[in-house]
Image (cartoon, rainbow, N blue to C red; front, top):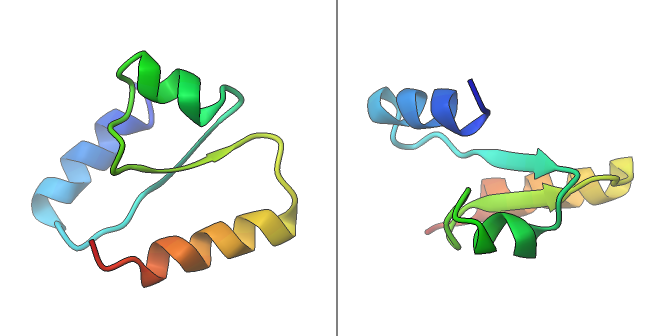
Length: 64
């Protein structure tokens, strides 16, 4: 099961849940191949703890 499958299942019962996906592929490649939509939150590996912290804060603050 990919990370997207459990996230989609959980969001059915918890629609307020926010998800941050991570992959070694670039966000452009992920979007281009239809793995995630352009509204998904994504961080590309490798990342530093500072980058991850900033991205998590961004996702938590997002009101979309």
